Length: 389
Image (tube, rainbow, N blue to C red; front, top):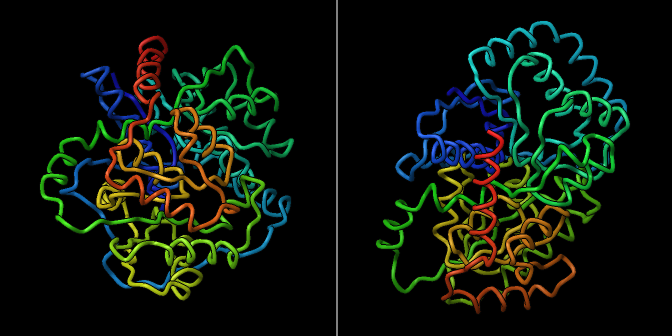
């Protein structure tokens, strides 16, 4: 059986590659004879190799650029994307049709694909639906945003058609139904595939923990540029305020901890760290070079004894790996997915006292985090996999 996994796995935010890898590995665990192929909407086919031996980290010195700190006018950019899409439709249609032709099943997911990023993802999903209209297709563990234009809703509704949709959280399911993008009968909530991170890396983690440095505790900050949140959530915190928050977190960390500050690879996240956070940190800090693949991401998370994170796919892998974690809530998806794991006590916000967040995190340092509902969600995932795939 040939399965094509479609998404944005080559995104610079390497959490998207982790999602694709987790989907692929769970499918292989269930169906030993499957042949997997990974396809990125923007970069075409790619490979996924799991293991710290293939860990990817940026090594060359780079200048990272911040995304524009402004609210972009929606319709000019959306209409530009639409015109470019129509102009390139024939050639892109042929290219996608060539990729899907040998697939027995097309799995679209996971990640935050049902969003209105100036029509980009809706149009990509529409193209896939047309190029693969004779193929079995399922939307697997995808996320949805609350805000979409009427045109984005129409495009997504026509792209999905009668295909089965599994969302990664209840909020995403509710959004798709209330927006009229899909019906209640065809949408079911599952989980985010990143909860299977430990299953992918368990052998590597055994080796890592066996060789862990003694006597040095590491607290990691997994930071996100707040402007990245503006498109998909109601959070409008400025870079200045967010930088002050994270710097206060960093400065509150006890001297006994080695402090690691990291991103998920997004260029704007790394620039935010260097320009808005580091100048206000008054203690020794190790700024981790951004990962270029999911192995690098998991390697840097596994080096931490405790983590305070904002990016969902820094928080979820940490929880899966048993790393004590505090999750900064900035969007419905963080709260919804972390709470579904039975870990709502790990949530915090930008309005909380930084010193209190650090104190709570440091108190967990000798624990192995156990998510009460993790195994239950995994079992439900495999149950639906057996029924629908």
